[in-house]
Amino acid sequence: MTNVAVIGAQWGDEGKGKVVDWLAERADVVVRFQGGHNAGHTLQVANETYKLSLLPSGVVRGTLSIIGNGVVVDPWALMEEIERLRGQGVPVSPEMLRLAENAILILPFYGRVDQLREQRRGKGAIGTTGRGIGVAYEDKAGRRAIRVADLYDDATLREKVGHLLEHHNALLRGWGAEEIAPEELIAGLEQVRGPLAPYVDCVWERLDALRRSGSRILFEGAQGILLDVDHGTYPFVTSSNTVAAAAAVGSGMGPGAVGYVLGIAKAYTTRVGGGPFPTELHDEVGARLAERGREFGTVTGRPRRCGWFDAAAVRQAVSLSGMAGIALTKLDVLDGIESLEVCTGYRIGDRMLTRLPASQADQAAVEPVYERLEGWSESTAGATGWAQLPATAVKYVRRVEELIGCPVALLSTGPDREATIAMYDPFAD
Ligand code: IMP
Image (cartoon, rainbow, N blue to C red; front, side, top):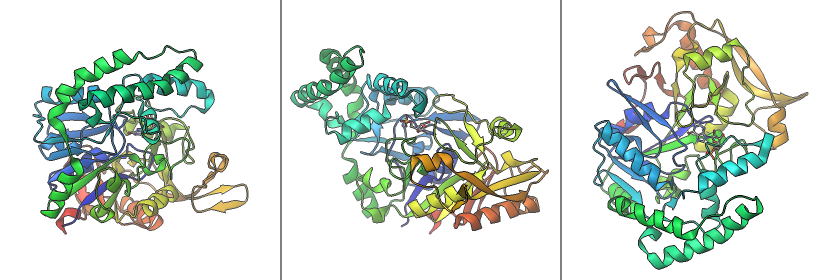
């Protein structure tokens, strides 16, 4: 039985929510394995719009949903999201939602530390979501983080809070910021442990049993490969590994369990926050993409930067995650643009590059090398078959496939589920 991992092939916001929802219907279990409530997945089901941050997209359709150990969990945000979904008529229950006991907690003051760090970076700010994601992953690597299981062991919790605050209060003192009182932090954690308890589970064991019984597992990635802490545009990245390999580590499974890797890429490019973006457009085409594509962040509401499709960057993402297919989304946003550019590589002065360089200075200096493609004036919005697409749109997709070295397995032509041309169903194998 094939499992499937859905991975963003750009800087996030590629439209993973819709694709995951489509696949979740065919899966027996959906697993989140990295990131936290910095993610924003929008699902459109019938006439209802669901905005998810921390919950795996399977919850909306009642598919067993798992938050793996690789996710950093703000328990208050999680409970709020559960309540919000219940308010929309989605019965989120402990039977259908499981939370890894070894997941790291995002503590209430992490957001403040995240924002203070950003302020101190000044012009070099990363443009984080301000949710304390990076602080949680730092504490994890620093071996001082509080894990879900610690909530249920009073002595350990007190000891760990003391150790953790020794570190953070020294920093806050140095910055002249207000320190954290241990008792207040512990009291908050004691309040949340009750409501969280029914969801807590040994997730790796459950997933192993599911895999052995032939269940189809869908791994739901958050953010995108260019935001990966190792392989992205460092330091303008998130603090987790967003590549497909993280699906195994972040859920407690072997690498062979990950299965088919489906990359998601927009037919153009967007980015939220700071950092290099070689194909960014500051002209009316960029403004048009932003407007037609409704490019505002799901989590922070920030306007997204927009630009041409960067085939060189997506080709890199395909390699870094072993993508077997790409879901190309928002093709309809390109409707009516007479002439389209696709980035095939970069140049720094006379130096030609086929990939994004690793050095920060070089990443900032690269200029895109473009190939011009003919656009189309017809509407592709809502198309459900190749025959409904203008010839130049088909050509665009075919050329993208050639340049990225990966077949397009699914084409999305609008926010509705039906607005999809599916060439390949990875779960059908
Ligand atoms: P952090 O993950 O909040 O630390 O933010 C680090 C970088 O990742 C910033 O540039 C954010 O805008 C970006 N980022 C984090 N989550 C998402 C997402 O879900 N979509 C797009 N960008 C994201």
